[in-house]
Amino acid sequence: MRPLLLLLICLFVACNSTSTQESSKAEPIDKQFFLELGGEEQYIEIRSSSSDNPILLFLHGGPAWPQTPQFRYFNAELEEAYTLVVWEQRGAGKNFAKNPKPDNLSLDQIVKDGLELTHWLQQEYGQKKIYLAGYSWGSLVGVKMVQQEPAHYKAYFGVAQFINMTEGMKISQNWLKEMAIENDDKLALAKLDSLAKPDMYADEHDRFFQQYLLVNDYKGALHNTDAIPEMEKAQTGYEDYKDYDWYGVWEASSKVLQKDFYVQDVREIKALAVPVILFQGRHDWNVPSVLAEAWLDQLQAPKKEIIWFENSGHGPLEEEPKAFNEAMMAVRQKLE
Image: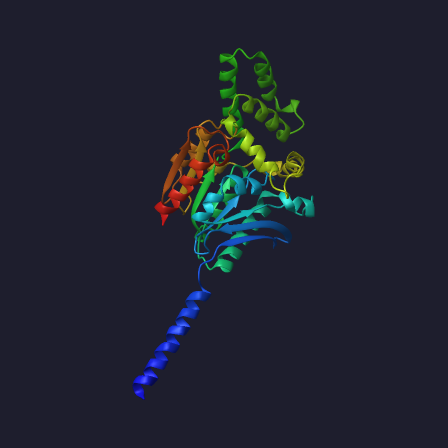
């Protein structure tokens, strides 16, 4: 009887073990939902080939320029290496349709929202630490989040890293002057004279946008113009974004956020307690890469690196998506 009893016990344990393994089996993730953060409903997409993948929370640029359809189109490959979380900040994307004038639309509140989302993701997916990536305006939000709560993050990835708008605009103007002189562009030189006089514009937001248009004329914002048809497909190719008012929403929310945007200086952050990897377009004169490179040189961090994209301006994740995706996945292998 004893051998039979032992066999039955072993079979019971084996069945239980198999059942437990099946219940915890890694599965693909494909979720779209609204989550309340800081008292405001905010749209989130989570996609991954496997629930075992480490979480990567992505912070979009702008301000108020959601990149949800762009990530679907250009960067879905990242879902093979990460559980990719795309979050639309208050005052942007689908949130704007729900509430075009959210309470407390500020950098400080968006940082708090991001930290709250981080805590929710950690609990929901049982991960002690996650990866954090910020693009342009989102890179300002990202460094603030990491500075405040570094223990929650495995590493920080800055894409077209924001440093300081005032200094960045001066660097861009110097570059534009060289380009204009080289091309005997009298109209551009006249425009540069006006850009040097802030009181000629309604506000800093307006002055920056006028400078952006001139920078883009010289391929210092969008450098790889071959990417334009694909970028247009990404913006208009999905049913839920085909009628989205990109510039209208950006104008409405970024006008409010400019009170924070133009007074920030990331150079005041001298150290971060996590690895810091920057992904920079070699030809970015919109938010000058040279300023980000200088900041990283002085920053104290456990590990730091800058990855250059030689045919990109301000948007390597869309201008060179294949190279960008490969670099992001290679970085994960290095860090784990």
